[in-house]
Length: 597
Image 1 (cartoon, rainbow, N blue to C red):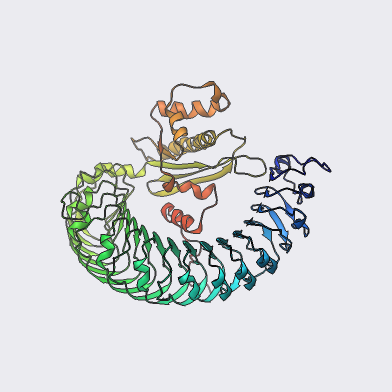
Image 2: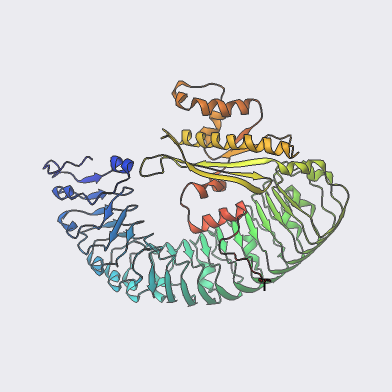
């Protein structure tokens, strides 16, 4: 839609989707277009991702038929006007509002969706109790909006609510009872606040709940039984609280649970057997608790489990054979397991030979236990990236078969009683690997893309970059390919540097990219005419691939660590990527004593 000053030709328009390209190129802000007042039949207005500045006009209700408004990702500031129209959906995400919430929004009786996430410049304020009058509201998203105080009891009237996100604020007080009796609620995010008290033992009406995140609060007491009998619950985050007591041994209805995080609490007692009989469970975090006893010798299927973390507990005894068994029918089948962390416990005995036959296992952490005996043969497994067996009582020689694990980056065996000679292949731990990513047309001002790469020497990041590209790309594949070319140029320089330092590797560096099209272009000897505008980058990368000096491979989007340098991520995903890259938490503080006098 193109705005025409003073024109009457807009009166019949029902939908306006405005893209201010010229304004973006000049990086100049503009105010709310009042020409829209001529659109007397306008129902849908999308002004998102532009360069609007200043306040939203107080008389916006002159567009009397407006039902859907998306003003997100702009630089609107000031107060939100009370006269916001007869709206059904209102999106105001990611702006610069620095006023307060208008209580008049509570009068929008038709409102179904209200989004005010990522407006952290709001004056710190309580949630208006008037919002409890929005009886038709199905989605309320107030994450990171500088909210303080308690969740109002008036929310008890929001009987149609399906999605509630109040995460990342400064809310305090106890969890309101109505939260756990809401029949239609499917997703509840209250994480990252200062909520306290206990989780109420009520399960009468939480029939639809699929996603519950109460992590990062000050909740205490036991985990109520209803949590483990919720039929539709797929993801449960209760980590980083002060929960105590035992995990109840109940498994009747947790048939849908896929992700469970109870880490960072004060849970104690034995690990219940149902944890190891949940068929759909893919991720299990029980680390940093006080769990004890032995790992149950269960015999049902854990065929979906990908990540298991029991770090920092008091688990003892031998590692049961089922953990690593691949073939016997009467044992567990951990075919999908990729990450196993049992470090920092009191496990003893030998490491079962099955540990190195799990085809998908990539990271194995068994350090700081009491394991003894020899390291098992490892010929069958070629996917392990990290092996951490440090600080145990292992004996014998380091077997040459360790050197056959071609993807190995980290091999930790310090503080054991091992002997022998390290396999010469372990010198390949100095090989270079790169994670490459690019957004596409991500800059709202000029639509240029941002390239990023992280270069690893073994498992250590030694070079990284995030830079806006010099030209506008025509496709996501082109944007990714230019990012690959930038990384390849840096690899060339690092390769010469490593040669001078006598760090030689017979394996070509690998560039991992999550764009399948870009990886195909790298290996395709045919150059298409429609790619002439990227000819230099094409031949630069293609020549190195053809001479086997470089390999370009696909990486799954879930493992795309360079996303941290090209696009906004959720706090949880960003923290996970930071951990995998190996960067310290910014909150870490160096402690010491100044010895100067």
